[in-house]
Image 1 (cartoon, helix red, strand yellow):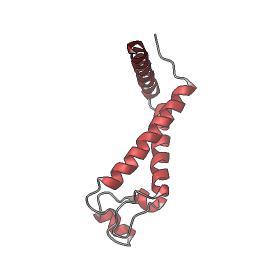
Image 2 (cartoon, rainbow, N blue to C red):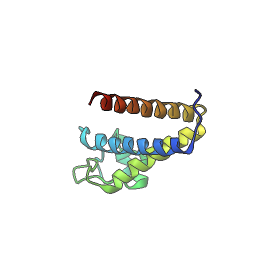
Image 3 (tube, rainbow, N blue to C red):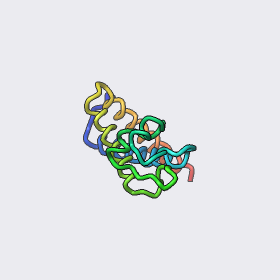
Length: 124
């Protein structure tokens, strides 16, 4: 059976990409050993820091007083989720074969969960 790309694949992929964006937000905040923002001058931060970039300056990413990425910032969460969802959906639309590949992964995952569900029901 050949998979065709449907609207529900984009909805499911958008939800998955949103969860990945939230996970990326948490990972950037929790597993950051060194501060991202070292100075109040953006040029110094961009040149010296490995994790601070033009996107952080342009979009106004929130950092605490010590220069670390803020985990409790809803703005940071929104930015991370928004860019992950937009990037993932753009890849599905514009990269040849990416949309069908993601659709096949979604259908395989949904089929595996359905099979596991019915197996657990049969074992009751």
